[in-house]
Image (cartoon, rainbow over all chains, first blue to last red; front, top):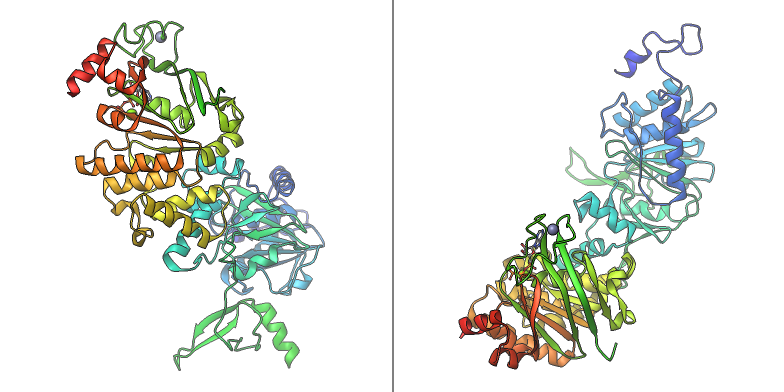
Amino acid sequence: MTVDELLRDAVPGLGNGPGYNYAFLDELSKRELRRKTLKAVSIPGHQVPFGSREMPLARGWGTGGLQLSLSLVGPGDTYKAIDQGADASVNAVNMRSLVSRMAEVETTLDARDATIVQTRHRIPEEPLRGDQILVFQVPIPEPLERVEPRISRARRMHAERDYSKMWLFLYESVAKHGEVTVGARYPVVVNGSYLMDPSPIPRWDVPKLHHAPNLALFGAGREKRIYAVPPHTSVEPLEFEDYRFRVESFPRGAHCRRCGSDDTFLDELTDERSGETYFTCSDTSFCDRRLEERR
Amino acid sequence: MNGMVLQVEGLTKLYGRGCGRCVASTGPGPADNTCPHCGTVVACAGVSFEVGPGEVLGVVGESGSGKSTVAACLSFDTEPSSGAARFARFGGRDIFAADAAERRRLRDFDIGIVYQTPQQGLDLDVTAGGNVAERLLAAEWRHIGGMRDRASQLLSRAEIPVSRMDEAPRHFSGGMRQRVQLARALANRPALLILDEPTTGLDVSVQARILDLIRDIQRETGVATVVISHDLGVVRLLTERALVMRHGRVVEAGLTDQILEDPQHPYTQLLVNSAV
Ligand SMILES: Nc1ncnc2c1ncn2[C@@H]1O[C@H](COP(=O)(O)OP(=O)(O)OP(=O)(O)O)[C@@H](O)[C@H]1O
Ligand SMILES: [Mg+2]
Ligand SMILES: [Zn+2]
């Protein structure tokens, strides 16, 4: 069923009633999600299984993050959705329209105004506060998936905190390429204990998770897993003493063509007419605001 | 532990449900290791031996006699049905009673093993250096330069050219793979080294070189070693004391030279005579 079909005859708040429960999920499903979220918060970085529901979106399109947002959202919340930093991408627009219509909440493009920020593959440039929740859409929750395809073995490694296979993966990268070439999905250790996949955010965003004042929740709909980084929790990327973790670097002098920023995560683009490469902020709302401020 | 490094007592491994009569109904007498009542395989039973510091103990026997099962139990690759293995590095306690974390520590630091087939002991698609470094990483080394130094020392000691340390053993010969296994097994200076058929399946000339290498390294490091082989020549060359196994039991034990020159058990006599 599509959102439009669901909402076609429904006028929320009027007698005829909508053809769906508030925030789409039934109350039992929300309760399960909240319980699993509490468990995830209590065991930072540990993947908690949950009963992923059918959503009016294909699995793999952020249903895990969406279910988390719908279980959290209530009257008075303000919701923001971004896809790789952009509020205007199709995925983000769909999320926003779905949540605003089904939970009747305000939406915003400004990260400062949001109580819930749902994201795919980025963390906003604007530092988040303790009264905000960051919800990630996660394609592959298992950080060991890269080195151990057998789930039973991966679980055992987590139970024993035996992450030498992951370390070996990084060693091999240095042996073959002279540096750690892992970009997105950089493996991190949460609270000095569990290895966690921070979702395909760039390395640029990884330090923002470390001791962040906000709660970060991760939802994988297809893989049916939830995990969390509670506020003020350590999140440390794996690094060697002689090959330190580094965020992406941009060419000297690179800056956003729109707002001029040289301290944000930049997307590299090619001007179709001149063939020249240029950069723009990946976080579009932040870019808009900078632009505004500079005028 | 009377100065011993390892004391194995009554090591028994059954594959199957077991019926209570399995051990009594198998062994050299019935000349079978499969229980006639319930079909359980008695891979080994009542195996006892000890290894002293710097000593090399041989385990010989035909195919299926239970040699690898003994190795698999000592390296935690399989859970024994009963028996104990007291280990000096584990405070003289029984390693089979160790919990998961202790087992991992024993495996990572204290017991090195070279498997019968390289693909059991190596990831053939990870570089030779990486296969060694994995042991160091398990021991919490976090300095790549330091690990590469140690790995190249170990590999060159095992006669693998350092220029090949960043190649995957998939492209190595059988002999080279066994030498990478040896380097890996020795990475964290284990107190016990288990070699399960380290030269089986290799060319005779390659075998001789590896046997020399094993003997030299063993003497240099003084690591207590158990060498498993169905080849009496290997056991004669490397060991002072040996066990002879058949149908899952130890049928003869003693000084290697004595066993080979004056075998007591009919099976050993057969083994020695057929090898001559
Ligand atoms: N996983 C298993 N399940 C059932 N039986 C097994 C298993 N592993 C080994 N066995 C049996 O246990 C017996 C002893 O096997 P083991 O591998 O220890 O012999 P071995 O002396 O090492 O022989 P080889 O010289 O061929 O390597 C054999 O009969 C074997 O078939
Ligand atoms: Mg064997
Ligand atoms: Zn039986």
